[in-house]
Length: 244
Ligand SMILES: Nc1ncnc2c1ncn2[C@@H]1O[C@H](COP(=O)(O)OP(=O)(O)OP(=O)(O)O)[C@@H](O)[C@H]1O
Image 1 (cartoon, protein in one colour):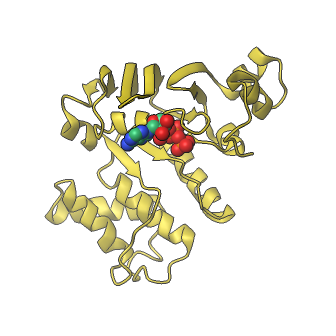
Image 2: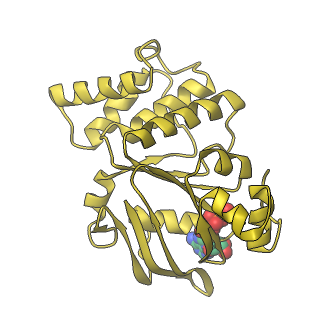
């Protein structure tokens, strides 16, 4: 579970976060949604302990990300926005490398890697060099690296940016599976369809603050709009920076 309370962060005179408070629950997919510059990336970096907020806190499974970033990182998987793969290494070797970074060695490492390969249905490609992999296959390797330490929480910053339709579908299925395992999934997005299709709860932020939260259906009801896209535009007061 991820909880932010009163997060504030300024970069010189730009106030990126102005008292951001929200919660992402286990067993749910939570979407962090907002126009360009709303502070989504700053928020996700604070949760991962890469940025220290000026005030407030980000807690992951009740551990403060500023005070114990290493403990927090054990409990989080990060899905990268670029899949930088070494084409001479196999998918299994990539995932094993990340398992090693998380302190897994020997038989425990082998077992952890095999578990992820099974979970992501990757046995057919696991021992192939990644050079020449399709985008969907590359994405599975990246996701395998992110979850090999079996984190309770998964963070994705605009996960479908640059993905083709098939890769987006594969990613969506994988996220549903992780959710069914009771994990907490938090992702940021500009893409309305993705959010409406994936999220149990949406946290809408504008200029560093939460302006609305709830399920897509609740937000439609609250604004009297039939489509989530219209509800969102009404809530943030602009269409700027939104992708349909
Ligand atoms: N390292 C930095 N130095 C200075 N200003 C920054 C820095 N990082 C972010 N900002 C500013 O903080 C504000 C929030 O940025 P952030 O990247 O968190 O927003 P975002 O919601 O992720 O935006 P986008 O959707 O456009 O990626 C913006 O005004 C941005 O210009």
